[in-house]
Image: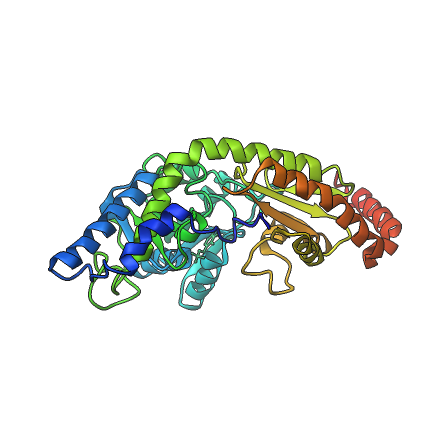
Length: 399
Ligand SMILES: *Cc1c(COP(=O)(O)O)cnc(C)c1O
C-alpha cells in the first residue's frame, strides 16, 4: 500500500517501538515512586522531555506532557482564559477543531472570540491580528501550519505583535514541528501544542510548551503531576516513544524536508496536468509534504475510495471532519464554493514515500478523475456552469 495521509497520522517508527518496549514490560515503575525501578522510569521521562524541548528550543521544564494535540490545545486556551481577568481571544477561521471548538465553548462561558479571516491562500494577515487587539485581549492563538492545505502562517510576526502588546501567544504546531524549524524564542511563543503521532511516535501522547512565568490554570486535578498542570500517572512508554520520535525528527528534518518537497512538487506538477484542477494553499509558504488539490466536478470521497482500491491512501482534508458531509471550514474560508470543496484531495507525504510512489499515483489519478467526470452529475451541466460562472464574474467585476 502507498500511504499518503501523514497529516492524519504517521506509522510508529521502528526505532521508536524499540525504545518503548522495555517501558511496557520490565521497566514498569511509576515515576512518582522512590525506589530504583521508579526512578529509572522518571529518568527516561525526563530524557524524553529534554529531547522534545530541544526540537523547539525550549527548556525541559517548560514542557508539559498531555494525551495529544487536542488536549494541549484545550489546556492552552482554557487554561490561559481561566487564569486571566481579560475576556477576549483572537484566533483564525482555519484552526483545527481542537482550537475552534474550544473557542466556541469559551464563548458559551463568557468569553468573546474574534475569528480572523484568511486570504485565498489561507494566510492570516498580520495587520488583522493587530487591529483585532483590544484592552481585554487575553490570548492570540494562530496555528503554525494548516493541517488541510499546508499553508504556513506568519507566526514570527504575530509573536512580535503579541509581545509588543503583552498578550500571550499560543500556536498549534502539531503539523509543523519536526517538518520545519520551530523556535519558541525566535517566534515569541508563550504556548505551543505538539502531538506525538504526527511525528512517527505513538498515539495518545503530546505536549504543551508553556513559557516560564505564563499564568495558566490546570484543567485536570489530582496528584499534582507535571508541575500541577496535568495530574495523572504519566504515560511513560508513550512519552519515551514521543521523545525518541522527537530526537529522530530533529536529526533527519533537513534532509527529509529537501527530499519530500521534491516529491511534493513532482506530485503537484503531475496532478495539475489534469484539466480543471488546481492547488489549494500557498504555492511556496507550505509544508514540504503537503499537496492539496481540487478537481472540479467530482466528489473527493469517491476519489478516495477509488484510490484506496488502487492501493493508495489519501485524505480529503481533515480526518476529523471527513465523516460529516459539511464542507471543510478551511476550504470555505479560502473562498471555495461548496461544490468545489467536495472535489478536494489531500496527499501528505512521509518517510516511506519514494519517487516510485509518486509515479504510481500519477499513473492512476488522471484515469480515475476522467472516469468519475464521465459519470458526474455536475458534468451534464458543465457548459452551463462555466458560462454562468463567467457571467457572474463579469457582473461582479471579479477577475
Ligand atoms: C492532529 C492535529 C491535532 C490533534 O492532535 P491529536 O494528538 O490527534 O489530538 C491538533 N491540531 C492539528 C493542527 C492537528 O493536525
